[in-house]
Length: 410
Image 1 (tube, rainbow, N blue to C red):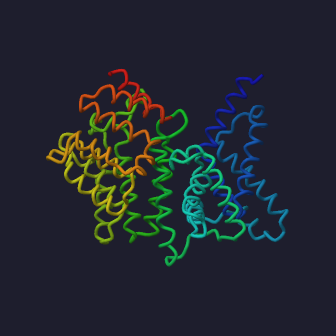
Image 2: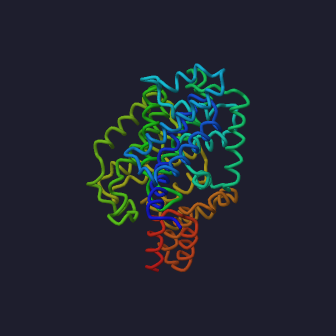
Image 3: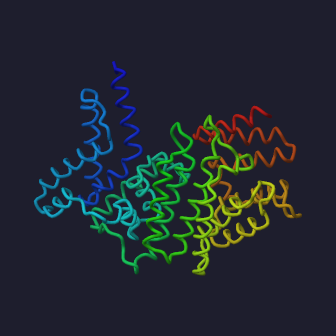
């Protein structure tokens, strides 16, 4: 029978693994140069903790404890590999002032020899510590497909001897888009989690912001890097107003804007200005500009919807994705002109190509948006059914609570 002590150890260990596994693995990959070996030594450290913590107690810094044990296991691995004696010295004395291991590992995972889908999946799993289920939810694809991508990518990196380093400037063009996509997916998973019992994972969102800020420091003349950092900081700026004291999600129109971090918003808009001055508009700059329109509005009623709709049109011209079409329809709902309104917005959604509708079928926001539009058009039964579809598709507790409240109101 499991004792309360064992249950406490299991719970604490699960938390530490969830929050720090990516960093621990990245630290070991830097030295071992082998994903599988790095994951093995981290897993071995976790097993050691399961055996020892119930008797010895949970250490004051459990993540540091795991890293120490994992490093010792890594040293054992290298000792068995005489050809890796130079790496043994690096493991014992980590270099001071070197770029963060996670950032270098992100670039390794995004090597052009790997398929793009595998690049993102591998980085999210190995560097950021997301579970296969969380990655599958982010990609809207089956979990088994993500698992296969990760396995094949690891094998390819090992077999091809792909180097572990930040690429030269001449190589950035092939790698940067994927790295930015990975960092943004990581932030989205932290901003509103797709699995687990918490609505928001501050650790993941903070990691994404940190990685974006490191990239901006390394590449100050890459406008999309500046755009992504601005986008993340604008979202982070209203974090305190996104949830009520009970943890329920507060919709944007209902948020207390006095709780938004105005200093962070000002800093983010400066980043947008720096990016715009480089005259190479892109996906993240446009998204940041849209979020800035919301952040700078003194009230929901004062939101500049015509400007937001124009920005979505520009975004669709660059990246015509079904998710961007969905968000444009949301903007159209609130547009004050003759092109706006719920009827026109719903018509936009109903006119989506079959491929776009198929891609959005597993996306809760698509059904929740249709529910709002149908409710605005006085079609409560259809709205109720759409909200039920959204509820069935989300595992986020805050989203579930919001949808339950809507269904109760019907």
